[in-house]
Image 1 (cartoon, chains in turn purple, red):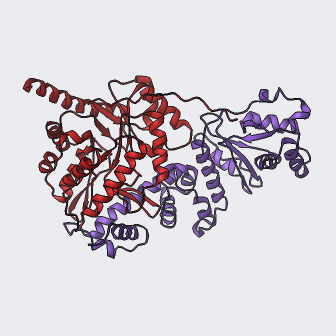
Image 2 (image 1 turned 120 degrees about the horizontal axis):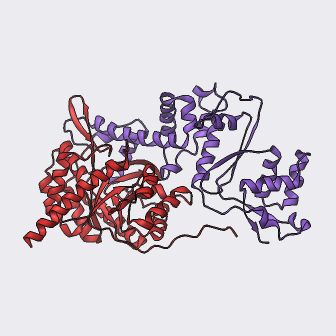
Image 3 (image 1 turned 90 degrees about the vertical axis):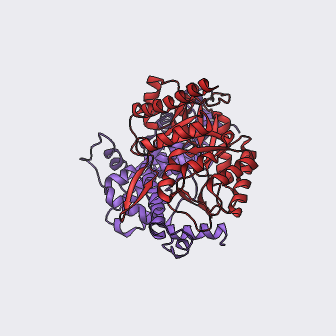
Length: 255
Length: 294
């Protein structure tokens, strides 16, 4: 009698490697053939996973339509089956897959939209934290603020693109409009869920540099020096207050 | 230090022998407005495995008013390899926080070498599988510090090497590990139609003392080349035949918490409440008959 592990390898091959001869030998011939029976399971898996991808990537689905989305999903699932149980964690590699997927080569921005939608999915499920407020900095003197290190909000993600993916994304939300998209616009986006709703904020490219330096552990002054070297117009006080208003920070790191 | 919203502390709340409903995000607002009672809810454990976010805010609000049951779909008790410790840890974290009255999983497998099918696949009922399932149920109960119940699956194929009848397999697992059983009457019905097994023989061979919960759901009748095959899609009303089987199951097992599952083409909460009220009617009738016979 084949071992349980042989059984499970054979069914795995029938699902994901297009090889079902070994699995069919294990199945009782009763009415439907073994191959038809295995197909029922395979279909169930692909339907569940395609729905999970559509839930996480609704704008991609809307942009390409259901039929083409299902086709992309099939290809993706075959090459990248889930490695964890929870469905909301499935599909992290979709953007990378789309980057190399020839049938969407005519939509050069689509992979970046997928990066954005994954960041939104991340923010939705990440740990909750009460965002730091401007008042939280008031106990500090001006010369002390520069020395502070800030902890980025746990839901925070940055996505940048050479395409106006922020406009495309907003335009594809319920009630959104797509008439005045500026194709020369580069997108710098900060995704945060300060409370229960995920916010998709378009930000100044200087803020991206500033935030990335803070994430690397630099203090406000150091991070600002790096950011203003690339963006001389950047205003330190406004940068901090804007980012605080968006909820970008969770805490002041205690040295 | 990061400030977190403080969490409510719950005590474990047992689930009464009345009807419950599978909890769906589509119904959250409706539940908060109507506060339907008496009722309990079951959730798919994996859907609440996030670190934070709105799903927890909703579940905490629901838990304040209702007893909960946690129904896992990806622990993959029947996988030949080791259990996934990550899923176990995350399940424990949820159980410790929400203190559900019941915890359940399936007699099936859904992962192979770290690949997840996200479907409940059938097992060959052999001595090797029995030993493995017993070990995995033991490990799960020890890790969680709680009893779990194991559900009979719906299947679309049977294995040549399956020699142990399913009811016997389940009974052995329950006897040896002390786990409970979750009897899905719709799954049983699907298997009756798909494989020609005998429902009465199956039900009377399950010892009533192991049964912690009953599931009820709809299925879809598919036709492939003139052959009917029932697909357990949880997308319609409980059919008459399944209600009949439920009535018989109550005779065998006595009244048990009974869940209406509806996971695809989800209708309004009212439709689910109506299904729950039918289940409650069967439960009440059964209790009255028991009282008269006592």
